[in-house]
Length: 311
Image (cartoon, rainbow, N blue to C red; front, side, top):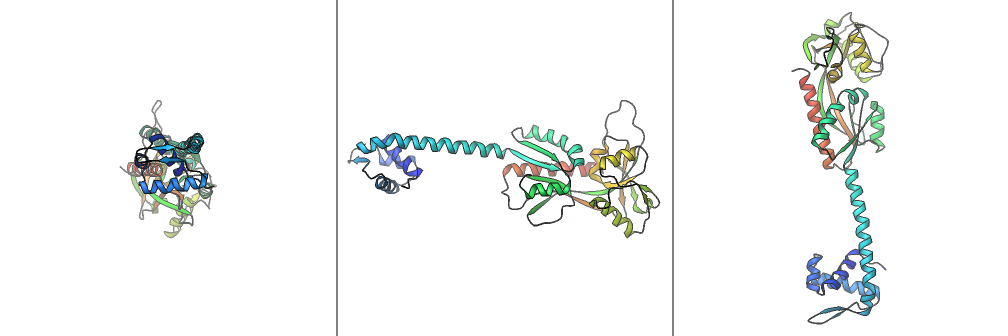
């Protein structure tokens, strides 16, 4: 037996309304279509279910016997599909967002406050992961959206540019006065790459993409510097700069993190070296309205950071 929910709906509607015309209107089919559904339904049930005259439509004894079961089957189906719909709606209102520890600790908390005020029904679950873990999470379907720089085009990964940041020189600044809170860190002036000759630079590990870019630029203009042993954490570098242990070349997206420290930022020029910052997701994943809202809000926020750093 292969009874469809549409056949059950047709049978119950005819029984309740006592009219093929009104039943057809209620379930949005033609009378001919309704008659065909009922004919097939009766064939599968093995009995005539209605007595039809020019004036009335009445259930036969077989129809009377079958009606409670048909109503129960429809009610069970509606409860089941309603539950699935609720689960789907709940899932669509949650999103997993992964970012590197620096971005997760210095950028996302304030962004998340603003986003929750604007979209109180959406829950964003944030994870702080390194770049490789972000990509693995997206490929495995465990992360919906990842944030970071140096994400190269790759099979199965879709990139969306959020903002472009230049490399900046981070130096120790004047000591903060007692009782003074955080200030907005921004580029106060420009410096040429040539001014770094002989400088002691605090460095990330040699295989870090940021450090690779810095080292390639220094080599291209034949600039020699001395440097510390490699550090793994950008915030550790900023703290060391504040304490006077050297200077550092970092992307301008560190500006929010630098607000906690007494440091200054200088845009490095001749040449300007840009870094693209992306949102990444799994290619082929259906773009929901939630994903569009999230990406749009992130794009505005990171563009504001890029603009504020130099304004």
